[in-house]
Length: 229
Image (cartoon, rainbow, N blue to C red; front, side):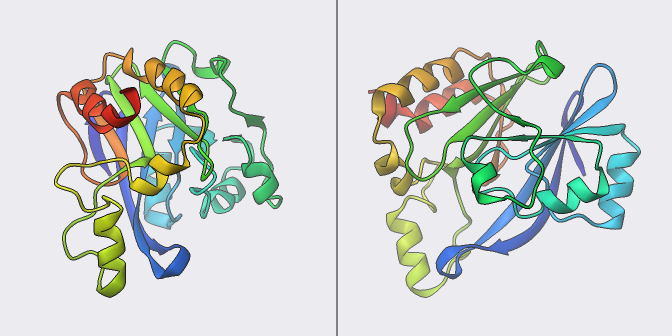
C-alpha cells in the first residue's frame, strides 16, 4: 500500500474485465478515522497479504461501494469482515441481492464519519449514480469513474479507437464522453458539482488514472468545465 496523505492509503489491485472485453485497473482507498476505525473505499481483490496490511492499520468498520459499477469484490470483503457496515449508492442493492447492505447514501452526512469525510452524490446520470468523497484531513477528493485516463497502449484494436473517441486516453484525465451524454439532468448534476467544488481539495484519487498530488481543486474545475458551463 502507498500512503497518500495523513491517514489515507492507496492499494492497487488487479485489472478486471468489464463489458465488451474492456479491462480496467482497480484501486482501493483506505481511510483511518480519528477513533482508529477504517473505511475501505471501492475494495479491490482480497488477498492474504492485503488483508494483513489492512488489519495492521486498524479495525475494518466500513465498506464503501462508490457507484453501481464498483462492487466486484465487495462480497469477499463482507465475508471477511461480517461486522463491517456496508454503504451503497442508489440502485446497487437491486443489482447485488447477494450482498447485505446496511445503508444507502443520501445527501445527508454519514453520522459515523461526519466532520472527517464529506460526500456528494452526482445525481442525474443514466449510467450510474456516483458518490464523490472528500477526506478532510488530507484534503483529498475521491472520484471513481467520472474522471478517467488510461495509459497510451492500454487498449488494443477497436477498443483503442473507442477509448480515444471517449476521451479515456486524453492528454489530461477527463470525464469520458459516454458519462457526459448520460448526464440527462444537467441541473441536478450542476448542483452536485457545486458541492464538490466547495471542498478545499489539494489531492485527487481517481480509480482509473494517475493520482493527483497538488492543485486538486483546479484539476476538478478543468475536468468538469463542460458541465459547469
